[in-house]
Each structure stands twice: as structure tokens, then as C-alpha cells.
Image 1 (cartoon, rainbow over the protein chains, first blue to last red):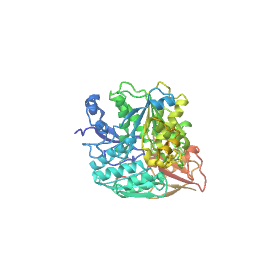
Image 2: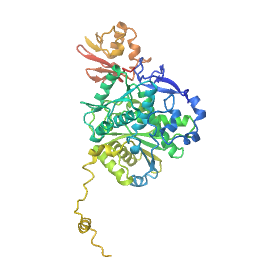
Image 3: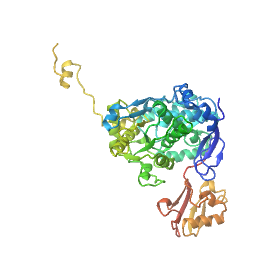
Image 4: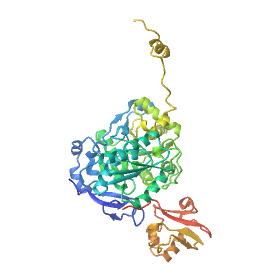
Length: 415
Length: 92
């Protein structure tokens, strides 16, 4: 067991240091807290070989994850396929396009299985028996499933207007599902208050510094699956901005630790036009954003007041990346395009990523020969409402060969 | 007078008061005058260059002052100023 890897927490703004407990805000300057690692101790033992010999899950990168002991929750999450997307690449004009396919993450079909595995393992280490979260859907599904398997008490808080599959995908695990009359930002504010009253591990409130680190594994896997090369572009959907921030952090850690020789990646952010506070600030050249009231079909990205918006803007700027936004129509187009070219049914957030990817290629920001990775973070079966009217209906026939051939214009072939 | 709403984590400095008053003419002088009344308040709200900290939001009548004139935003009699940490606390 390598207990020497976590130094503690520190404030991203003023640098004040804290022990590695369940804290997320600096009591001096109100900045967010971040895990501080002892990279000197980690570096000698973290080689490509050692990682390749690890489990086929995100835990092969345990040396860079903020848990003190061995993982105890979510042992099979992560290490999802990196799909060479030749058809979609042809369609968009890219020679080397890859889809990082977290629609098949274990067990709840979204990238949230990564962050929750880390958060619940850490919550247990810190002595919690009750876990909770504020969620736009995918996180709640993952917390509920992992809590069931880990035999922990569970409360999930969701906005009242989520897709049916995301609601059912909580209830089936029998957590306490709390539907709040309001949007995600209302849910989040309420959860901050509840976290102050009850000694629960709120994965994205008081456990957030640990939880968010799980997202780095998407970057690690992409690099390893590309043969230990960082891509030229990585397109990331943004809600709170945390995922994008952590992708950039993960790439930098690999570079700093000598696991990749060069870091050329531009990190591009994607939002829906109906909720684009971060992409809007980027367009205006601001390093601060104006919170918005979300109105988009991409409900999983509908965070109007993004906690990591500032850091996402900074990460994209540092990497030389771009940001853009797409309409609901373009989101649906993105979903069906991905499905019809690569056979991958992504949720609405995936439509945002593909839509923005398409735009960035068209604008010449992503060039044909550049190795490009699109992060597809959730499964389309959870947001069926969004595409229901865009995919047509089955062709109904009587159980008759003649009827079938007639309907499909196949004629009656004589043998 | 301008009414200033004080968030919970800063009330240790204001003797528990959630609302205080000020006669300042802009945000910067308001912070200075509050710091005179409640020493230490400025350090929590501003960094060492005197700029308002990134994770402290200040609203003038519900509008974020970043979208007005920042710390030079004028305030007048009857206005309400709220100091709100961007990330709510309340963790164990």
C-alpha cells in the first residue's frame, strides 16, 4: 500500500494547506480545494510497464488517485474502448479521429462511474456510511448503483424534469431519490446547505476534491490507448467545467512524470447554446462568466453556474484550445451522426461534443491530419426522449413475405 | 445608507451581524470602510493586490459587479450590496 502519495489538500487560489479530510472550500479566501500529491514519491514507481501490468480498470492509475489504501468501491469502472472512428472521420474530414467511448462504462454507462468509484472509496476511508450527491442524472445513477453494491446509505438529489430513464436508473437501486422543484443550480445550492447539517459524504460537495480527480483517468486512458502519445486535440463536453480541467491536469501529470515525451494537446470545450456560460465567456475573451438559466435538450450539461468555469477557461487557454456551442438541433444531428457512422448511441452530451467537433473542423481550428479524440461521456438509452422524433418509426408489416418485399421494393426473386 | 449583506463565514468578524450599513460611494471604499469597522474583513474579500478575490461574488442589487464597473462600481443611498462566496461551504 502506498500511503505516502497524498500530501493533503491545498487552496487553488491562495495556496493555504489543509489535511486530506472532507473539506472543499478554503476558509480564508473561499477558493476550491485540490488534492496535493507527493509526485517525488510517485515518480520512481510509476512506469508505463507498471501501469500496463495493472487491472483493466481505472485503478491501473491508482498511484495518481487520491485514496490512501486499496480501492474498495467500483473496482471495474473505466478502461473503456478508444474507438478508431474512420467513418465519422471521413464524414467530418479528419484522418485520425477517435471516440473515447464511456457510453459503456461499468456499471451505469457514463463517465461518472469513474469519479464515483474514487469518491466512494475515499468516503469510506474517511469513515462515512452515507453518501449523497446533487446531480443532473448520470452522477445520481452512478452514486445509487455504487452505494447499493457498497452497502452504503444513499440520497440522490435531482432536478424535477429529468429524462425518464435517468429517474428510473436511480429508483431501481432503492436509494432515497429526492426530486427538487428547480434546476440543477437550485439542487446544488440546497445540497450545500444539507451538507452543512448532516454528516454525509456528498460526492460533489464536501468530497469534491477527491471525486473530481477520477476524471483524470479519461486522459490517462486516451494517452495509453494511443500508444503513450498525447493527441493533438481532445474535445470535451462542459457542464461544471470540472472534466475539462481534470483532462488538462491528467495530461500535464503524465508529462511531468515522464510517461509522455511531449504534450501538444489542445483541450477544446463544448457546450449547448441553451447553457453556455463557459463557452460564451471564452468567446468574449473573459476569464469570468455570467451564470445563466439553462434551457437545452442536453440536460446532463445544464449547469448555469459552473463551479469550475474559471479553471476550464484557464485550461483551454493554456493548452491553446478552443470552445464552441451548438443548438439543440445540432445536438440531435450530432447524436444521429455518431450512431449512423460509428454505431455508438450517445446521450445528448455526446451530441454536443460531436456538434462542436464538426464546427471546429469546419472552422479550420482542428486540421485534417491532427490526431483528435472526442470524449463521449454518456449513453443514449438514458436520453431517448431527445431523439424520439428524429429517428423515424419501424416499418410495420403483416407476417407475409409478399408484404415484406412489397414494402421494401425488393420484388419477388425467383430461384 | 447602503445595506450590506454579510455571508455566514464572515459573521465572526461582524459580531454575528448578517446585515450592516455603509455610507460609502463605491464598492472599493465600501470594503475599506467595513474593514475599519470590522478589522480583517478586507483580507478575506480581497487578495494582497487589493483585487476582489475570484471566489467572492459581490452583487449590487442582484447584479454581479463584474458586469458593472468592478470595484469602482458606484453605490448610492438605498442600494443593497451582497457578499456571497461562489462555492457554498458547510462541509465537515
